[in-house]
Image (cartoon, rainbow, N blue to C red; front, side):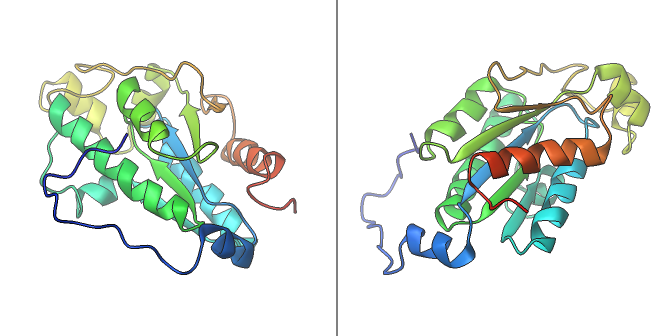
Length: 205
């Protein structure tokens, strides 16, 4: 459930355009596609490719990416377990707003704790949350290391780094598993697109 607000002097507004009306207008169903995995596993890369394909097909999409969000909305948060929890909690609430507007919302966050991801699933409606486990072995992620983060973590420069000095709890029952150590970018994105088509979030091409 959503966290209860501190103030009791607030009232939710009701819009005159329903979610169903918006989805009918856009020709799609709103959904949060939650990419989770180690740094360097390919979360953002796959999300960007899925966004490109869907947008070229006329879908209305948005991407919420870990680094981008930490430059604005969550710039006040660090990487302690408590801050990681709050980072993912806030993103979950933003993702819910996008989903309820009928947008296909692609989120790319390490989101290392299972309980945080499960909470974000629970605050959404039935069928509104698709968990995508971007499963690349640690050694593959370290070989890629596009930001040089693993090297810094191994040297002790970056504390509490997921996969090295902080835990990552893999999903137990994700809707989609991408083996990006073996699959090409096109194959991984294609799996996500096919799932969205099969479940009726978008029309088949």
